[in-house]
Image 1: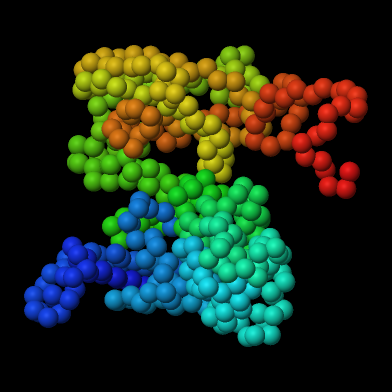
Image 2 (image 1 turned 45 degrees about the horizontal axis):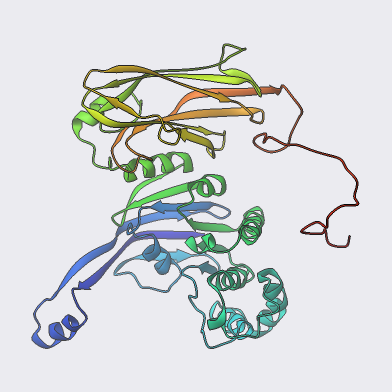
Amino acid sequence: MLEVTDLCKQFRLYDQPVDRLKEAITRRTRHRLHQGLNGVSFRVAPGETLGVIGRNGAGKSTLLKIVTGVMMPDRGRVHTDGRTTGLLELGTGFNAELTGRQNIIANGLLLGLTRREVDERVDAIIDFAELDAFIDEPVRTYSSGMVMRLGFSSAIHAEPSCFVVDEALSVGDAHFQQKCMRRIRDFQARGGSILFVSHDLNAVKMLCDRAVVLEHGTVMADTTPDAAVNQYNRLISGREEDTERDHAAFEDGFGYGTGAARVVGAELAGEDSGAETVASGEWVNIRLVIQAEHPVPDLTCGILLRDRFGQDIYGVNTHYLEERLALSPDDCIELRFRICAELASGHYTLTVALHSAENHLENCYHWCDNLLQLQVAGVRTHPFAGVCRLPTECAIGSAEGPMFKKRIAGS
């Protein structure tokens, strides 16, 4: 459906705008080159969803602009089968002076639809975007969320073969985001291909069949979503250029990090079962042994539960729990967490991380992905739907009381 081959794109950066004119007149170079993309290649099969993740400045937006034809590459080729539409930066393709309805028509024509096809879709686009009261107002009067709703609705109703989605979906309320996700899943079920760019790692894991990790304009990994997210976490922890010593230290697959402090032992067991298989509602003891190789004046230990899809379910660390830890060289301590497994039946993994302060973005000492396994089987108390049980109370009383803040429609 989509094939990208050896894409390269350079940008000229000037210290100040007038340097462009000076360069043109004097013929003296006053710019520096920035390599936005460097030899990017991948393929998206029909019906496949490919995620693209990477740090800010990695080249994600440049890639999408080239794929959708907004920008031309310096070298390389983009081949698509069928219509490709996308939702990139908010307002892309819209004229702020035109009304929402006029922009739907103009945008549809730009996407390759005929005027009859656009007219047939206008009502559906307006209905999905939920902009009936504002559709004949200029787009410059719209909020960012309204622009996103109009853009997504226009793009998805063009019935593309390949749909390109950027971070714009992060704008808007929860109701419309869920509505967009349902429409994306429906598009997937009908065999549509998707190129999905997001910093929402859970969304990448849940929606994508594969994921590409971009760094400095190059493809660092093209693999499963779970493995790609692990690679991304490694990048943002500052370990993208491990030394030979680091590779030797972690060649057994026991994680990565600076090694100033390491997890040297770990076990998990239910208080009643005494094993990794527990009942929903049973307390679970997690025991970690941590050893320091160098002084660590500010140590945080965190745990993260993931379900079988790799979705983050629950995470906590000693920083959040206001437990201060500090280690000297060769110190070895035992740390225990006790959590109640109020989880739905299924298979879970536990990731353990050692770092400083609140998260692993600075001073990542040791990150251990999926270190321990947890199997939840059976339910101790009342059944429930969803991923986890929340404390719930229910009371029955007379209906003759204060008015509800929100009445159910039709009641």
